[in-house]
Amino acid sequence: MYAASSSVSAPPRPLRPHPPARGSARAAEAPLSGGGPYLAPARPAAAPLGAGRTRLVPASGPLSGRLDLSGPQGAQLRTAIASVHRICPEFQPVQVLRRSGRTVLMVGTAGRATAVAKCLLDHSPLWAERIRHEIAAYRSFVRHRPPVRAPRLIATDPDDCTLVIERVPGRVAALQRHPVEAPPRADIRAAVDAVRRLNAWRPPQEMFGRPLDYGRRIARFHELGLLTDRDMGDLQKLLHGMAHAHPSGPQLTWQFSHGDALLSNVLLSPAGPVLVDWEHAGWYLPGYDLATLWSVLGDAPLARRDISQLAQAPGPAARDAFLVNLMLVLTHEIRLCEMAVQRSLHEPAPGGAALAGAAPSGEEQRLLLRRLHDDCQMARRAVRAAVGTR
Image (tube, rainbow, N blue to C red; front, side):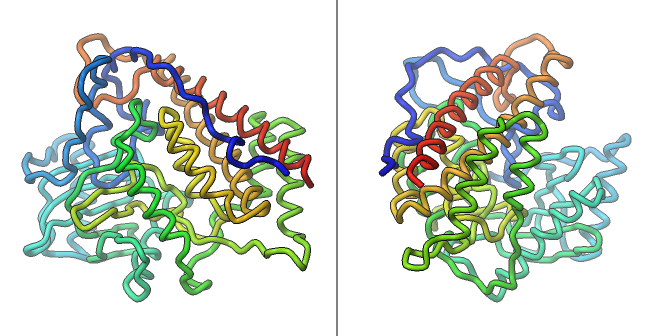
């Protein structure tokens, strides 16, 4: 039998100094920065080796600042504020938390409560469908509360792709998609426990669909050259084996998952962990959220080992599902990282001192890409070993 405990557990990595982060255009770094709606910066600059760990800044400090409504971006912001006021007239914007080419996130007040408004700027079908999926998830949570806390829904407009939710007090488990320094073990444990409670939840089947078409995703990555012919064949064999399990054996059931269980989407509040950004929520093969957490914890080998053992403990079917998820998640991360590296080459960051909260530099992205390729090789060997046991 294939040994699950050592299949995808990374060996400890020696400490190495990281180059200082350089400021760069946010658009060039967007795919690798945190995606939580409560984030303004990406992360603080890495501390020198030997220095104490820099604690994460609370994500919900006092509201301050002003809105810049001048220029073309100001016109976009005025349009977004008007969309919010149509569904929540009492919302008073105070500060822009994050703005990209697709969405803008604003924090403000709604009556006596503090709220966050999310508005879509790019109304292309893909992004409109994503935010409508997130709106549908928050609406579903009104009647069927998940076992982990999610922000309370205040107002929505699916046609205009506008969402207003409560602003939860707390700090983000990690300010970056791939933390340069591993978060405290207690924070990782809290995130893993929240994900496991969510995965054990069984909401009504009709509430959510299956966001990921596994066969199509595998074929797409193979077409892009991210998966080899053997990779594609091995993953299809594991999928076929799970779909045609022996009647006497345990049947593999689909698992409700957050779909984007990054540490940057986990708020550590005084009342417990809170999950945000539900635009990918739905039914996946078991272990998808744990595979996502595994992929971003490159500097936490012990946490990776624990996650691997938790995901594969139920048996061979769960092991195969986790490995398929892990290969797809890592391949997706490699694709995002390669795109960011290419942008950093064509749009070099300006010189100057590193700023707190700066996005990863081009060199940091290249180091991350190398680590992701190493992780993918490790997962590839585990997949081939699992295929050999069938």
